[in-house]
Amino acid sequence: MKRLYQATRRVQNVDRCELCAAPLAAQHEHLYEPRARQVRCACLGCAVIIPTGTAKYRRVPRRFERLTLDASLWLDELGVPVGVSTIIVRDDGRTVVGYPGPAGLVESELDASQCERLLAALHTPLVPEVEALVLSTLPGGGAWLAGIDVVFEMIAALRESWRGITGGPEAPAALARVIAAHAGASA
Image 1 (cartoon, rainbow, N blue to C red):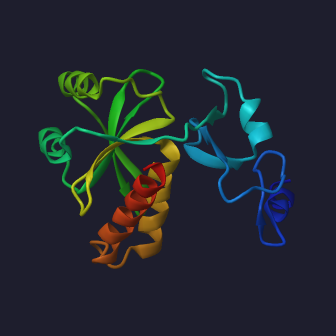
Image 2: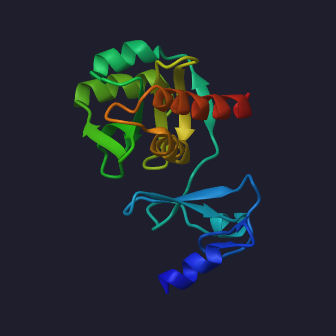
């Protein structure tokens, strides 16, 4: 069955909905499967019938909103050793800091007091599992509220550009391009 699905995913170089195989436009919806930690491409019809709450799939909000938080200050306070990180609230109430890497999202749980201060500074709650706070000290850096699909896009960009043990000079540039593309689209 899986091979049949994969064969229908991309027919005639057209991206297709991962639920019903309908053709997708360049701008389309995304669904997140928390248990598998995977983002799925979806047509609008499939996306709108997904119930809210703790369903198998969750609709990813189309949001990339710049915040006035000082990314450098927060990354230092959280002890983040890299120039880009994400803060994600999990369904069980834990808040994790994630670093996009070539092997996926590397996560560690935040200290409760740090978490409370950071979430209070946001002035808006993160939707569990499907929204993230993106903090960047790379060129053009800053802080943004973003859909989890942006985090997965950063991971994909790293996988494509990673060279050697440290990633090479292209890895940070690839992350900066993803952020700039979304920042430009939301302006």
